[in-house]
Figure 1 (tube, helix red, strand yellow):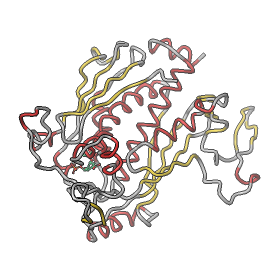
Figure 2 (cartoon, helix red, strand yellow):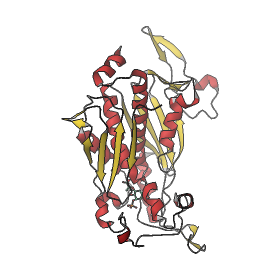
Figure 3 (cartoon, rainbow, N blue to C red):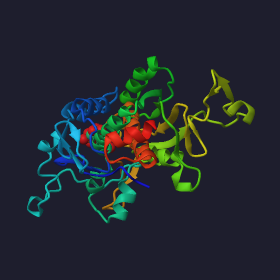
Figure 4 (cartoon, protein in one colour):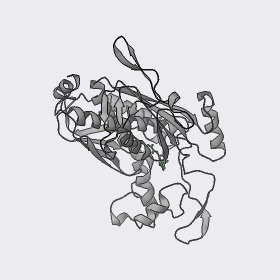
Length: 351
Ligand code: EPS
């Protein structure tokens, strides 16, 4: 069920990225500096490629906000791709501008190239790369920033942290690990954790499979490009039940827990503890080191296509995941408490 919904559009080297959001209450304060700071956070992180020196993402709000507050109508967001200036001909929408400059036909293992080209019957793999690129996560973070602004009104806030890069589990070693991969023309993945605090009890439900908030969160994070696994709370493998499950106690008349292995979710519902989700990102599939591949035009063996890319983007990915969790939480809050305006939502929430 969706209350808060949106669509995005835009290609990596196209003119811009766009979003239309619908279903947010009126009266939410929209702080454009906060949105742009989130965009800046997503662009940071050691191991990002040259593209990040070209882009300096900022969002423009085209509708749905007046004098700094939502007015209940659909919100339109746009982020311009600065790099478009260098790709105008290549990304033109007009048949008169046809060029095969920047076209490629050798699949990159691990990317969407192969399945995407079969599915959409495209000979030029550029047509697959452009939308499958993680560039689109920029506009998703702008949408997430607005969801975060709604959550902030309820004093719900989150953060994320990178916990592993390649084989290094200690931040002191992260840069070294990335430098090493870069020297070898290779790429690296890693792991991160997202935490949200001060959630109410009972977001999501156990009554039907598609209403569990754990499933919804897993879908939202798993579909970030390159994410391969999502985990909620402590990985329970090898831990017996008596050690894993979070025992209850009473302190000053309040029901408390002695641990939080469940990561704040039991039976598909938030239980009032901190929400803790971690995810693993695979190494980026575009890399200088030549992987074995096939040229889709000649059907002959070839080295995989390479173009400018990042060496490691785990830090960015963690910011994207924070945003996606914010969408899911905002939707669940609106489903549970309702409200067409912020006053109504706050009244229902604090009842
Ligand atoms: C990406 C390839 C690189 C990344 C890009 C994702 O872009 P380019 O091909 O232009 O060098 O920098 O990420 C972004 C542009 C971004 O804003 O995060 C890919 O193929 O997924």
